[in-house]
Length: 113
Length: 108
Image 1 (spheres, chains in turn cyan, purple):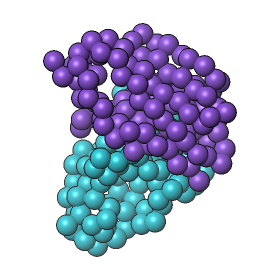
Image 2: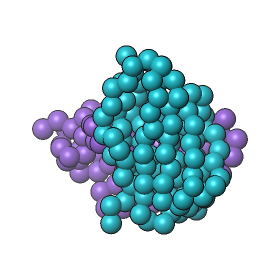
Image 3: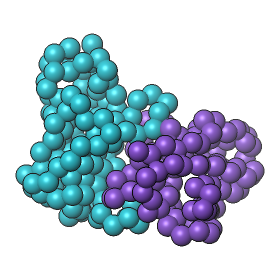
């Protein structure tokens, strides 16, 4: 069982470039999330999905887009990278009940210069 | 919206007991979770409280008082491997909102 797999692990972007952060889970979880974590800070929710074809905004969605065409995959798209998007991005999944824990991927460290 | 307050840092010696407090304000509340994150790693789940009282899981315990919008994580018999950041998080409509985290440093 791989759990939640994120790629790439590291990436450096120039301002204005675009990229997609990949996330896949093999636990058949309906709920998936994207968080960002800035140094010394907690995690901020960017987008989440409660099932294939359904996505919704979190606390900090500006500058990002998501899609959920399958249960397994939940990619995060950055269209016009900005220095403010330099962060560590974590994808997570859960069964979706309130007492079910989030399972996190190992993160993608993104630097925008 | 949600806001969570927890201390930024705690330092203790091996074998000691540490209590990390968390107070929260939220428009809807289902439960309080705790996550551990080692430096450079991913957060991992520690505990969840939906009802008032104490939940014990080995050396770690978590407490919740819904009427006080307050909870804490108790780390007992501290070990060096417990050096990490600990985050409280409130669940509201299947989404988790996290506090800024408490960095626990365990000294020999």
